[in-house]
Length: 157
View 1 (cartoon, one colour):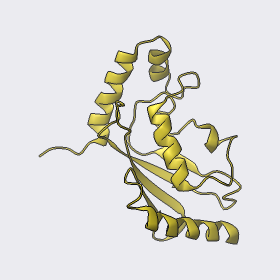
View 2 (cartoon, one colour):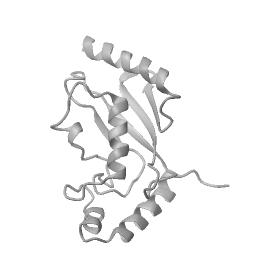
View 3 (cartoon, one colour):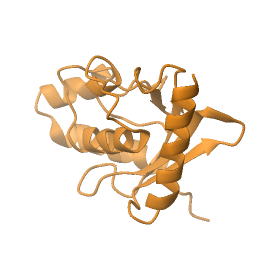
């Protein structure tokens, strides 16, 4: 557990330094628990998520970095690899392809990449996956844009 704390403190310091370097990701550690983090990520440009800001919750195990963090979307998102109700994310690096070389910041980058390049063959959201698999890109994009506007964009007025 001491090693994981040291690693997380190191990542915390790097995040403080990189705040300006990576404007698409804002990572923050819970003030009272180094194993709980949140992130705000910007929806990638030229995707239905563009203009949205999505909140992620990280629960870091005591065996970190040997085990991956649990990450989920707190913001509702219409995406084939994200469970609509729980926010669970289907991403290989959060499961069997994890490596201790990954950091919380690089996990955020991988999630942004997944947002831009969904994998409809391993869906957690079957409705979204089915739209993409059947070739209905327009239907998928309009649903994803609608939920981005409803859940991930600041309300006007």
